[in-house]
Image (cartoon, rainbow, N blue to C red; front, top):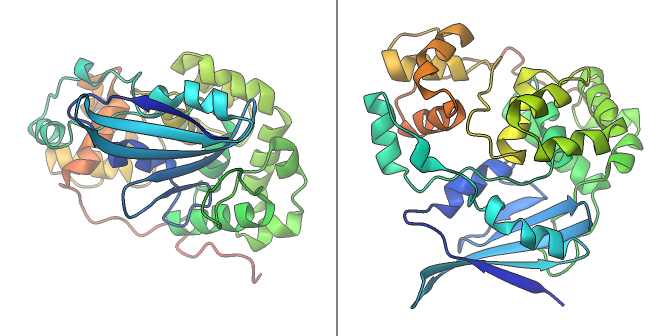
Length: 307
């Protein structure tokens, strides 16, 4: 039988903006948004697989209620974590805009909250898949691997959804299946090494950001970019700024100064007034819309299955 928990969100609150970073493309088999605004998530918790449905509805007393309904062995764990997943642990009131473009985005998107999943491997594997290739190619690899090796979720999840594989199951994926999914040897090796230390990496979910970052980067193949992308979701870390990205420093520098060709060093200098909140500032700048044309990716064609 399903179990449910309700949460009264603050005002303003944007459920879609809060959860969208957890979805790896529109075809993500583990996370999807229905046309009516309902969200489905299929996760592997410390207690086992779980299906979570999140619905948003008006309420005559509270004004608005968000309800999480869960099925499967991980029900108790995921419902306990539900407020954090929805951004209840986030502290957006601590943020102070220092630039006009940031202030405008902050006013327009004041309902943004940073989601905290409390799960490391769930975010780490797709983040490794996104290293050095186009987003579309990474999303294709995630879909293909989950459709082939993911588990059928408990409860009434949409038919095409899947529970991400366990660390042991990831380690059993044959080398040719990584290749067919477009995942090169170095990224596959990084995922397999991480899976060998999955219990120790999951401990990062209760660490402070600096310690969690250090823990993840002990694994060869996991650098600052991957650690930040993972901990932004696992911890809801407001200061987990992505470094080493092809586009982000260019976008931040252009939005705040109008200059093109920004670097990580320039981005760090510009975001210094937001110390402790640099990831939130970057998210708001990207939502603000004043961005240059994206560079062509260094590896525009990363499908390698035919090779």
